[in-house]
Length: 411
Image 1 (cartoon, rainbow, N blue to C red):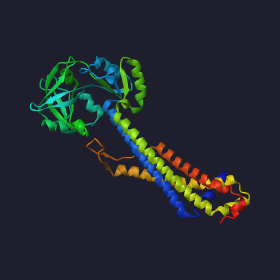
Image 2: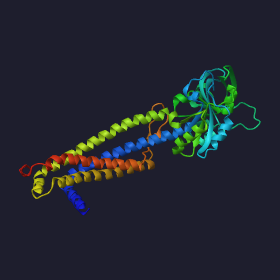
Image 3: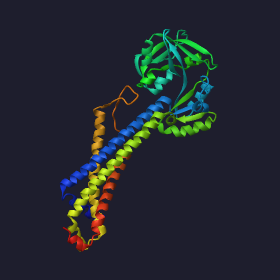
Image 4: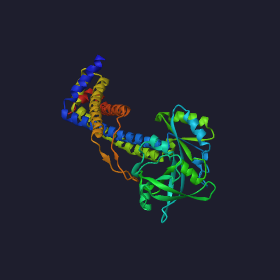
């Protein structure tokens, strides 16, 4: 250990012989480390945000009939779930299950009397949907759905997407008519009242989306079924164990995870993996070339010195160790500086918010944050130190094995 520390001190003194070159090399390693950490942290934050949004939208698990996920329906709720009350109670008995939300999805027409347009409607449990999911909609007018009061006989409430409400010239309090096909294939109509107007941030959805209660949707479709059940768990990492338990408990139903439902999350993750993977590879190549060039210049300048050390009995392995430690020190100092820089920028973004522009297909931006992941920091710093060490050893190998006479005669 003492000998290693001596060689480490010797290598550190050698890096200070040309401080400008060493500073440039360490700076490149620092910038490369910071770039990888910031890009990787942004990707991790994006993955986590999309995963949380997907799980909050559909539930950590989605239960339905197998045909519901694999086949098209000829009539609404052809592949719906029966005996919802008993099934919901059985699901809530699982210790990991926090809430179970039924959902009825259907399509049809919505009309203000003068104009009709296509709608995509979702029936939800008003008492639980907005309490469990939190503010997943931006209400621009009116208020969210609520369970109807006992004895109330007037028109049931709905919520409209902002663009759909604008198209129908509807506002909170307006009366509209829903028209849809029942489970028997007949047409049914129902008068409803607008309770609120919302925006999802996705213009295409806001042109068609309608929220109503499960009871209203079932009355319109003349059925007691629901399309699926969203199961919300107490934590994200309980998803797979809970899926296995529920699949064994309810063999007649298909149990899918939020990730199987989140096609956007899967696509974005695959895209970002390719983009940031290529970016990391480019940065690593740049760092390797810079370190290789710096070490090559240092070794060429010291060829006669290395020859003298060889003549005095220093072994090639010892010289390789010293030169490798020089590269490792430069990479290590750069990695630590880069990690501190990335950490500072990541924390600064929480103090000074930066708004990102809306992504394709959305109308609202989102705050820029960078995840601080200890594993990412450790792996990136180790990789940077390892790359600079290997680059230094690759350059030094030829020179330290040069014949002593040739090394002493080098000019």
